[in-house]
Length: 269
Ligand code: HEM
Figure 1 (tube, rainbow, N blue to C red):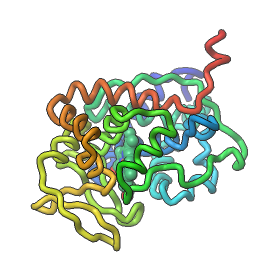
Figure 2: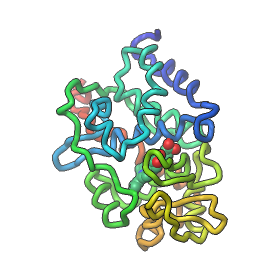
Figure 3: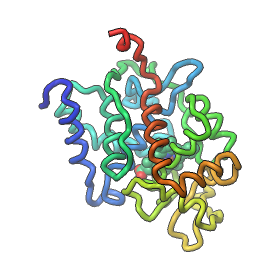
Figure 4: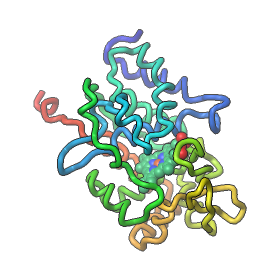
């Protein structure tokens, strides 16, 4: 048990659970990043509902949103850390785990502040269906991310997180990794997106895209980033300039994790 507020001790314990031999590519990192993103990405800037505050994915209604399939694994990886440091909220733990995972996989340092609390009733869950649908294109992506308060450059930077991890037949139904280095945070997603020749392939009844060697994959939503001229301009920048991607990703991901967190009372202190 650590002292209340010892976030360094929590960070150290998160680092210790990242190596997971026998799970996926040997790291819990990618699924922890997806948990932090899905906990935050339900935010609606107009109604100011959803977002990372509350850790409402603990409740069945949000946990069972089909978009969140597989995130029970991420929550289970973190549960022993919550037991060891009971003073930290789940909402802070889930977002901090995403930040520590990115940093440990070689990514940028993402700004993170504690202060989220856990809501206690299921009726505080945002409605299902607010997270993006991988089968759709640029209009849908803009609708969903503008609703969270992001602009085009932030959208492209954020989706660059697909440089890590993979799709799972038993979760989304899509299959495969986006890069050859799914446990290293880099700009490889953008490099592969512009370099490879992507052709459609039906997997589990859904269209995804394959490279000529059929080793990597892209989702229809990923390909929208090179079909849409405005998105493509930003993809080209990130494919050539890893530092530009890291800088933009760090600020956009930091902003994502703050969605729905009301800091007005804390600011007055
Ligand atoms: C248009 C937006 C997006 C769509 C449609 C989308 C869709 C998906 C899908 C279908 C998967 C596969 C899930 C599975 O089968 O395990 C996935 C995985 C993942 N997504 Fe996204 N995503 C989007 C944006 C983002 C963003 C903004 C982030 C983070 C900043 C992110 C991070 C990840 C990560 C790290 C994984 C890998 C998880 C693992 O390896 O278990 N995604 N995404």
